[in-house]
Length: 186
Ligand SMILES: Nc1nc2c(ncn2[C@@H]2O[C@H](COP(=O)(O)OP(=O)(O)OP(=O)(O)O)[C@@H](O)[C@H]2O)c(=O)[nH]1
Ligand SMILES: [Mg+2]
Image 1 (spheres, rainbow, N blue to C red):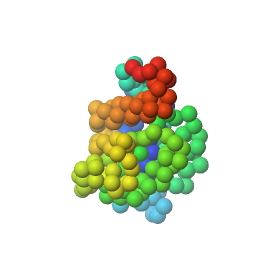
Image 2: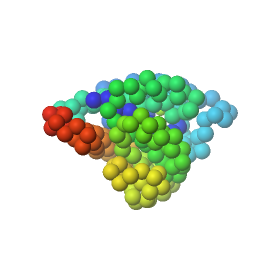
Image 3: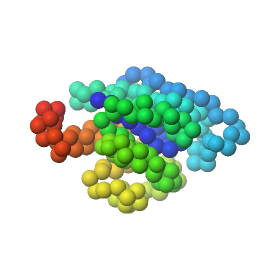
Image 4: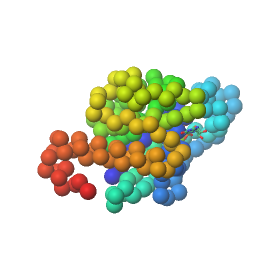
């Protein structure tokens, strides 16, 4: 099962893949040069690298092998997106409550691609701990979209998130293809 992880620059995508992958994750980090104003590190002052192509990790969930492909966060690397998303069955959109608006274009993308998705709220120090329903309302997503608060550095937290995504994908498949879902449920 291929899933895509997306979200804006510095929201914790590479961190999340590194926390949950059963294999050494593939990363494509490049050092950010000081003075490069294209990389806004206001909210992530400790960040020194950025993903220029993709992240990749793999894990097992209840006997299902899940491949996680992370998109690059910055708009100038979006030419990678269509290749990364091809063949995916679902997506995680990672958000930071200090700058929810930065995730709108990622939500639009997965919505337009007709991918089932869950929203993961990465808890940064100094971030607002809004109830998940408030985040759902602010992002204008419907009640059936799971919104999960996570710590991208914590393996169990990320596993629970991915389990929520797998269940959401299966539930959506069940609604649109009742016979197929019965055959694929664990
Ligand atoms: N406190 C805290 N810090 C985090 C968390 N997740 C990520 N970070 C930190 O936030 C910074 C950015 O994380 P990355 O994983 O590089 O973010 P990214 O989304 O991959 O960034 P790009 O690929 O450049 O778009 C790093 O310094 C992380 O250590 C979190 O859950 N809590
Ligand atoms: Mg990254």
